[in-house]
Length: 387
Image 1 (cartoon, rainbow, N blue to C red):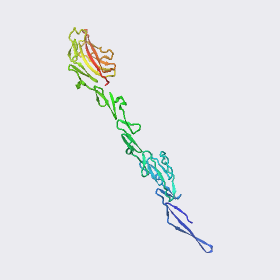
Image 2 (cartoon, rainbow, N blue to C red):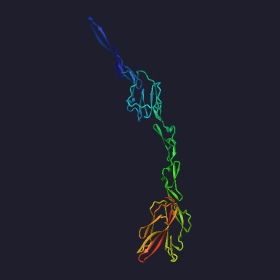
Image 3 (cartoon, one colour):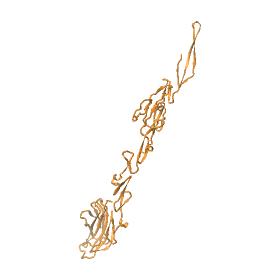
Image 4 (cartoon, one colour):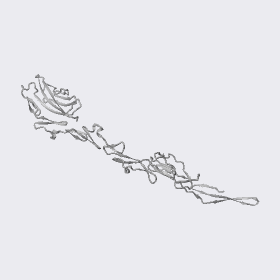
């Protein structure tokens, strides 16, 4: 009788032949003869191995067999006779000849567990068709491996700058632009619409940028601030020789170098005195002219000017008051000491506008029991802007 004995990789077939020799007296003696034959090899197509139990060639699952079958985080997809290394986002459909492939949008998830062995008849070569469908941003190469498409080189989809990504691409815009809703076009950013802080006075938008402008009488300082131009120092004023140029925020004004009017005469710069007792009856004996400029809409209360007595005598008491120019109650004079007082702004003032305020100091002589007064005529020029 003949039998098959399985052996890894091949079979060793041994014929065991019993030869029975008849002996006398009806006795039989049997001898066991063993006849060994050369082993028979069964070879399979590359990618398959022989299964001795089913006596068939089965597919080798390289993905389960090799831990590092695919590098770089790619997924390993086993198929008949081999395996594929695809990006994790790739979609693949493997079919036999004649099978209809599913629509491209239907992904086939990679197997999470080892697949069941796929068996094929021994010595029979399987010929099938493998359809590889890649996700958007990938395309199969000659080995049916999904490779990334560099859209920046092949399509130039971005209006400004294109950066290739695995399976996609990213568009970026030049400074001063932002991506449009289509994510490929670039549109100008209107920086002026962000905040009034962009410019101190006026913001001018331009493609990809913006600029700040200042009103007449100012110049741009840095990128956003406006600085007053001092026309008096720059010599760009039109004051006459007998006039004094006084700069204020946003402009200048010309005032007479001799502000004294009869019956006063000029004793020094900006100081007028009355020398005739008859003509100066009821008038302050002297008037001092001062000028100052402030910005519009200044926060209040604000100390803006200090009046100070030039001569201090013993046994005297000084009082201070606003004699004229405060009809609207824009100012308040606060006594600081026996020799000084502070002019306080009580309301935000709009400009350009000029205020002339007469500040009077009355000196009462205690021992001789008489009083005298002096007047400071302050011209306050309010600029047109709060800077």
